[in-house]
Image (cartoon, rainbow, N blue to C red; front, side, top):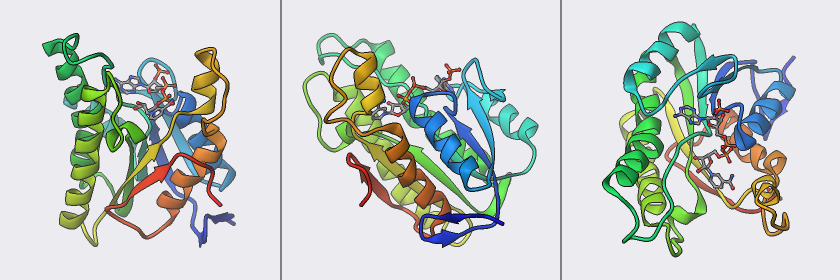
Length: 214
Ligand SMILES: NC(=O)c1ccc[n+]([C@@H]2O[C@H](COP(=O)([O-])OP(=O)(O)OC[C@H]3O[C@@H](n4cnc5c(N)ncnc54)[C@H](OP(=O)(O)O)[C@@H]3O)[C@@H](O)[C@H]2O)c1
């Protein structure tokens, strides 16, 4: 029997976690498994399966090979940091092609493949709404993902749910960079936001995840 997922009792699902070998995605995968879900960890070069979200054909191949899927979480997506003068055409193209269109295409290509009634949970970052120096490409791509999710949720209402988790700086990432973990959020705490969106009924939500859920 499935454990309660957030506030919800949920039948076990088969869930693709794209970026499931990374800092955030591996914590999300572990949390979903603890609630009896079957998780397929998808990485760029490691994991149960691989995909390049920057390549739509690769996403189509992933869905074709994955078999039945009830929900998709994406905790992957590259965007380039750098000052406006430093950012090249390629830097903008990577940010748009990977962080933005990679996640958009995970949703588009999943329609009709992911079980109807299922969900897509995407990832941006708090820089999307609170830019800082050197974040114009990162903030642009993240804000566009959030706008996409709100719009897609309207079109897909009743068929699929689309939501976004917007994490703050992750504590493990700060530690890897030689910083104090505070004020980061630990990936295990962040995973709760994904768990609740996968198990919930919300759609078109962009959830701020800078602090552990109370
Ligand atoms: N960490 C933070 O502080 C933080 C804060 C806010 C937002 N975010 C966002 O959250 C997302 C995940 O961050 P993270 O720190 O968990 O990253 P991470 O530890 O670097 O992990 C990245 C994951 O994405 C996979 N991946 C990389 N390129 C890919 C591609 N082209 N197609 C498919 N999968 C790909 C990696 O697979 P391999 O392991 O096989 O390479 C890995 O599973 C990113 O979009 C990041 O911008 C992170």
